[in-house]
Amino acid sequence: MDLGAFSISLAVKNIQKSKSFYEGLGFEVFGGDVEQNWLIMKNGSHLIGLFQGMFDNNIMTFNPGWDQNAKEVSGYTDVRQLQDELKARGYELQQQSDPSGEGSGPGSFTLRDPDGNVILVDQHV
Image (tube, rainbow, N blue to C red):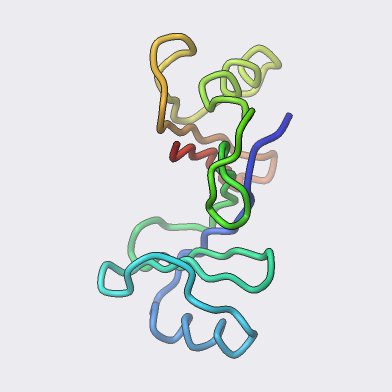
């Protein structure tokens, strides 16, 4: 199962402090808007998202249809197909996109791992 590009989305208390901290580790701003309290930062192929006031906990994020440079890839598995496959395997989804065959384009779903960590599968294409 190919889930697409991976990043970690961090719930931060102070986006400016977090930005400076990660810049010190060699990360550069790759996307986002600091005025809207969110940034995507990149160091090589490593991506982190900094989100102030948008959610309570850190989230593992996968982006079907994207590579690590946020470029569209061909031949990816649609988010609706991924969610249907996981549901068929017995995974419980907290939030779902429209069912397979009833939509296309952007969509997302979430689930939790056994320790309660949130996983977001978020398709932008």
